[in-house]
Amino acid sequence: MKTNLRAFAAMAIMLIILGSCGKKDISLSATDSTPETKPAIQTAVSTGINANCAGFYKALPFRYDSSSKKYSLILFIHGIGELGNGTSDLPNMLRAGLPRLINKKAFPPEFTVNGESHSFVVIAPQFKKWPSNADVNDVLRYARDHFRIDTNRIYVTGLSMGGGVTWEFSAEYGASIAAIAPICGGSWPDNTRAHNIASFNLPVWAFHNDDDGTVPVSYSRDYVSKINSWNPATPAIITTWPTGGHDAWTKAYSPDTRKNNKNIYEWMLGFQRRVTAK
Image (cartoon, rainbow, N blue to C red; front, side):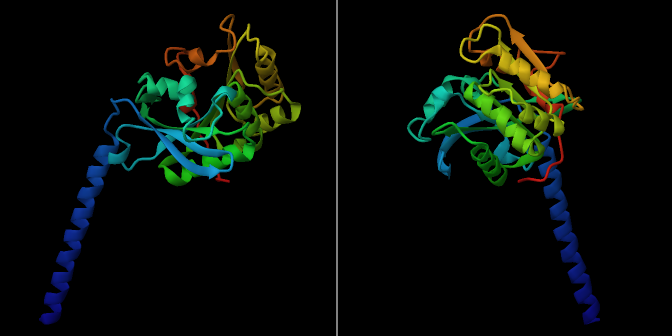
């Protein structure tokens, strides 16, 4: 009799635990599916990632802390004018590109692609000097380790210096990311790098102005042409504008700039890949 009572009590406790766990899961699921309607929260973080990066801006979806979901990641690489110490120089990052757009509350909180809603975590590291591919990979590894990232949806973009770094990083680490968007990238269109990018079947959308007096538009055109000469599964594409000088990033990052009815962010979200993190 006592044995039966103990068994009954144990079963009752187990049912209570399972019931409470079930309720918790339902609550989290409901929270995760709640639409993002408020702008991302961008904050400066001073921390040593490696010798060349002592700080970054992070932009998290407004509901990040009340959700358990994993988010798509954009890794943004700044231009040479935003190099700095990662502490007192961090506000320089707000002058251009994604940090500026997010700071102005002009970055949409949510994007709908193929019937699914997505929001981004945006990490914008500040480098002390022109970063190596390994420097960028250290930041990417840090982001994966410290934030809830969907590792199948990691996108890299940058402007000027950062655009060049985007080209070169993707030629070495392209297997770990889903797509790239280099803007007026300061990198010589090397045949080996182009072949590597094509071999990764890495989707590419490049941007440039025809009258760029700092980085010739031919750099972007030649990269795209060389990549496509290897017949990748997803052909590289390019958008150019006749005027605008070196600043192609304001137009490229604008949510209103569209090609085939998609802006740069919706285009990114059209791609994902299963990767083994390095």
